[in-house]
Amino acid sequence: MNVFYKDGEIATKNLTPGIKVYDEKLIREGEIAENETSENIEEYRIWNPRRSKLAAALLNGLQDFDLKNDSKVLYLGASTGTTVSHISDICDSGLIYAVEFSPVSMKKLVRLSQKRNNIAPILADATKPKYYLNKVEKVDLVYCDVAQEKQSELFMDNMNLFLKEDGQGLITIKARSIDVVQKPKKIFKDEAKKIKENGYSILEKIKLEPYEKDHIALLVEKSF
Image (tube, rainbow, N blue to C red; front, top):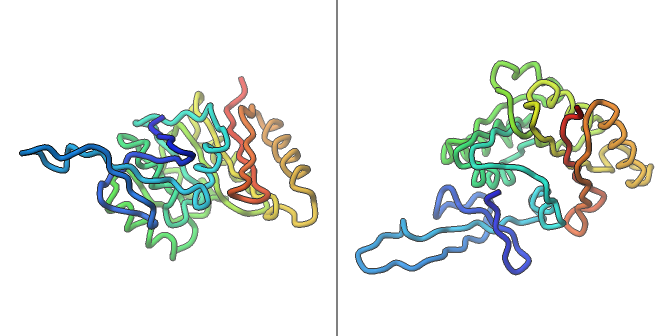
């Protein structure tokens, strides 16, 4: 996977050099020799783990996450595109179907897709995947970051429809969106059990502290 680690930080190679997405830090490597242009310089975007749960999971030890440069991704809860943009860097020859319910966030997501042609924004409700069935092909990854009570259910509904047989799913579960009374540890255990009972194996469980409180990331695949 095309992700870089240095001095406790994580970065992706910028698909659109010189252009920021969310005021992230840009790092340039290389030198301009005589008669050469800036095209010889590689630029990287620092991936802020406090702005992206996927970055938090990777920094906390997520290992078996399999994203390639040509991977196709269904992203549920794309918001304004912070994490989407870094996946766009990684899957530079792939495609990200970015599903977002908020028209306000969608406006920013559309503007992002105009600069990055591997992002396909979809204004839709992730709890109703059949409404975008004709817009999304089979994908290598279903990524879910939707903070609501039935987040595991909508995650599985989308995987059942769109995930390839050898694909992966990754969900970031926010305990307080499911139950504000139950202990997060109990909630995480119950959600993991629910996912396993519906035909999926859990490859990794990654807590997201200190970047996100009461969150966990679950990496899953289909059971055979």
